[in-house]
Length: 111
Image (cartoon, rainbow, N blue to C red; front, side, top):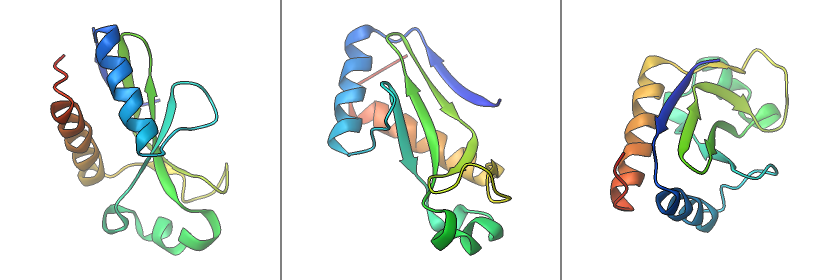
């Protein structure tokens, strides 16, 4: 699995991040798992075609006590296995890393 990882977070920083993610209603059914929505313009052609049947398409963010991991696999919330579930394009990876870094900056979290 491919990940973007930030480790050595302070516990208080991870708590601030999880509080913000909950406020944004991105919480998954597993503790510490959050589903980040993706911009439609950066989805692959097959993901855009499958928006109604498989979407929304998301990337998983796992927040632990001292780290966070952004999974670079685009998942379909409505279906586990499909051709539309595949790794993010370089442009989408860049966008999501920048999004996550900006979220951390907004929360005054440094790593």
